[in-house]
Image 1 (cartoon, rainbow, N blue to C red):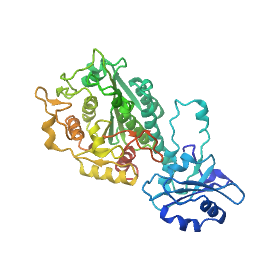
Image 2 (cartoon, one colour):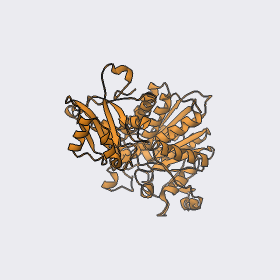
Image 3 (tube, rainbow, N blue to C red):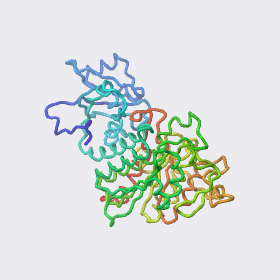
Length: 469
């Protein structure tokens, strides 16, 4: 269990500080039921229960008697993350929170509020957070399970937050190797010109301009008798746009372009740590889309693993190229379930913003499950259609398909349709076009990396293949 959790058994005679959370409309009634000293303090300090208002109230003996958090209108289910973000070191226990905020959700909120990316901070700043507040996990709540989920999210966030000078294809491979060692998984890597020999020509073409060799990372875990679940993640460790060069502002967050890869590794960690009875395969095409004399060009026609020829309409639409080769291989095994994750299009951000990643699937039951679990776990996703009327848009006049057609609309859909051309055998699959980034900080979600949708996906996998199904 994570170090910022405690159990009632290990407390002994120590009394934890009680935590309260209150909606603004219920603040006055709440104050009337508090111990007199704490109620007087809250009234004297002007506590009204507005959103994000955290007040520490002393007890009669002058010690910290309670921590009270205002929830405003109660719109954010993870608002209780402010406790672990702001409270001083100590041991705390949930005392009273409104319906919909307590239990496992409150414990998870505490976990994500405790996350911090401190790799590049000086020792003085690190030491300030060395001792963290701890939460007593309420009776009946599985703190171990919540810790496993949180650790998967932290892994993905750490990988995405790491700048590209320290997170290239080789470093992404190393992260996968460390994961494989921890869970006794098998891993193989095809690197550099070997990609051509093994027939992954588009992964090679996108990554060949970089001094850091492209590679396909392939991790496998589990019993071969169990249902196969395959995860494919885009691992573009930095995207300049290639010869169709991005602007400076367009490149400013491109360290996150390997967010799909980071998220599938985080999800894989959740699955393996929970020992779900699945045969897991994780495939990550890891490249850097750079500019040099060997860069692939607009107008080039590339071969693909599937045999389809691909005209390059834009070198900045590289993610779908590397994914296509990986998806072709993944699809050849006909997994029972396949998820593809990628920071693929600006069109997806225009359609649903940074907080609501869209997904695409033809499977109605899978779509319903993803939406339901996304809502239940407040890991929101939104279905967009694989609209077949746009199929003709991605056709090429000189090749089988174009990676960036001359059509200014529905870019997220046409990108998903491109990927769908490389999935022929797998009946149950979905593609997620994620931002992997937070631009408007909220409790437990600091500006920077985010592991979009993987809790919803884990819940679907656990529901379908877990021991308790």
